[in-house]
Length: 229
Length: 231
Image (tube, rainbow over the protein chains, first blue to last red):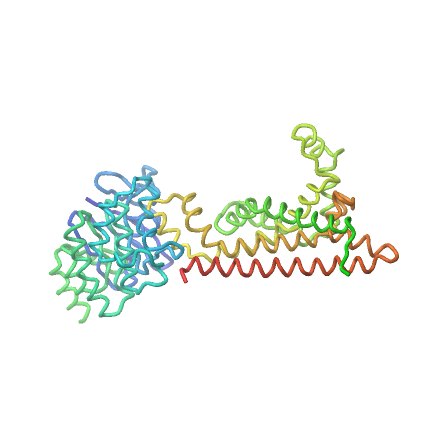
C-alpha cells in the first residue's frame, strides 16, 4: 500500500498539496496538464524532493521530513515508465531491458526475461538500438525495462501521450495485460479519460495541485462532464 | 632527399612520447574535473574553474617558471618528491610531460565538460530509478555518452602538448635526447647558421603529425557517435 502526503512549492504561483493512498492494482492520477500529476510521481520515485510530508510504501518510509528520511531513488525499487521512454541510446534493447537486473547485481533470470519479452511482444527487437524503434515499440521496451528491475510499484507517466491514436490502440492491450498478469501495482498518470477508464480501477483527480476527488472510474463521467461544462 | 639527423629523429620521438604520456595522465583528472564542473554544485566552483583555465591565459613562460620554483630539485616540494618518491621532474622528459599536461589541461577539461553538459540528465534520472547509484550512473550512462567529447578533448590536449614550447623550455630546458622536443629543436636549428633546411623538415613533420592526429580523432569521434546512436 502506498501512502503519500506531500507539500511542495513549485514556482511562485503554484503549490502542490496532495494526500492520497493507493492499494488497488491500478490507480490513475487524472487531471489536466499542469495539475501536478508528474510532480507527484516524481516525488514517489525520489526524483523530486517534497518540502514537507511523508511517503510510505508497503510499510517502509521512503520520505519523511520530520524524521529526516529520504531514501535515494536508486534504492526505492520503484519502476518508472517515462513519457518519452528514456531508453539508453548507447545500449541495445536487450541491454536496456537487462539494465535494472545488472545494477541490482542479481543473477540473470532468463525465465523472467522471456516472460516480460513475451508479455510485451518485443522479442524481435532485442538486438536493435533504441534509435531504430518506432514510438510504440520504444514505450513497450520502456515498460519491459521497468518491469525487469522487479519493482514494488510501477509508475507510468502518460506512456501513450507521445503516440498517435493508432499506436495508442495498439499499446493499450499490452498495458491491460500488464495490469492483469504482472503482480505489480501501478500508478497510471494520464489526462485521457478513455485510457484511464480502460486501465484503472481507482481514480484520483488532481486539479491545480490539490486532490479534487478520488474514487472508482465512474467518477470520470462526472468529471468529464464538469470539464466540458 | 628527406634526411634528418639522428638528433632530430630523437626530438620527434620524444615529442610524441611526451604528448602521448601527458595526454593519458591528464585524462582521468580531466574527466573528474570536467564532471565536477558540469554536474557538481559546491562552494568555490567558479574558483576551481578559474584555476583550471589559468594555464590558458597565463604566459607559458610564467607557468614554466612556477613549475621550476615549485618542483625544481632545490624547491621543497621537488626535493620531497625526489627524496621520498623517487620522482624527478626538473630537466627530465617527465618534467616536459608534466608541463605539457598542465598547459593542455584547460582544453581537455573544456571539451569534456561541454559534452557532459550536453547529455540529457533525464537519462541519468532513468538510470537512478533502475537502481543505479550515482557512481554507476556516471560509468554506465554519462561516460559512454560523453565519449565523443572525451576523444575531442584528448586530441586537443595531444596537439597542444606537441606544440608546447614556453613552459617546457623554461621548466626543463632544451637538452637533446632528454627534453628537446620538436618545437625546441626547431628553435635551436633556426638559431644556428645553415640550420634552416633541417628546421623546415621538422616543421613539415609537425604538420604531418598534427594532420594525422586531427583526422584520426575526427574519424574516432564520428565512429563513437555512430555507435552511441546505433546507426
